[in-house]
Image (cartoon, rainbow, N blue to C red; front, side, top):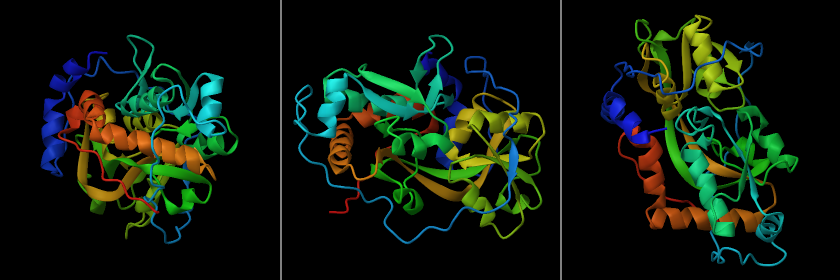
Length: 321
């Protein structure tokens, strides 16, 4: 896919996000982005709010250690086991445009998260292609790590206190806000207009929580992937979609008749998921993230995939030790 062409095509989108206004935006010709599947059978109302989280600093991670040279992982470490296997296994998305999606022109997985994962493979092997990308849904991320199906998860995975009970996280590599996606002719323009409305979220994400926290009653429906929310909105099964704003703008790129509206009602702090009690691998990943922040790689990845959203900078890391 020609990312330069997409960047020019979505210039209006970029200006709207930078301005931070509540007015809707619509994307130009979406022919270059993947088609949307019909509403899935998993579409169902979420009746109960997610569990409230215990107080913790969800974004604080272990301080990175010195990065070993690629191909020279210390014996007895998780990185050495990965090196011996010959590839790093990473759980990713293949349905979220801009972050993890299958390029229809090449059949290859592309996106911001995909390139972050490839940088970790580069640090282990000296070759970003020494990677096995395994598609997981948002709801499968924790299971994939607990059952050792993957070494890492890089999939718009927000670090939260509740999730930290089951997995560990790297430092934050991307921040987002949560907003609302509606048809351009919708009367919904802010969270105050959601009373009694049907709103779609992807199951396994943190997006349902802020909707249940609103002072007005909202009917929240869950699906497997964000593209399923897009299909539900297009078919009139829901009145709106609510999720992280870069994900929503990726959906706008697929349908010119949609707009992102309102102020932020929540936030996300994306981090790399690591199996619990694996401090050496957490420190290694944090070393990779520290390197790509410092040498400009993070910025190049952002500009390539997310430059259409406006200027961006890597989040400052927070450490727990």
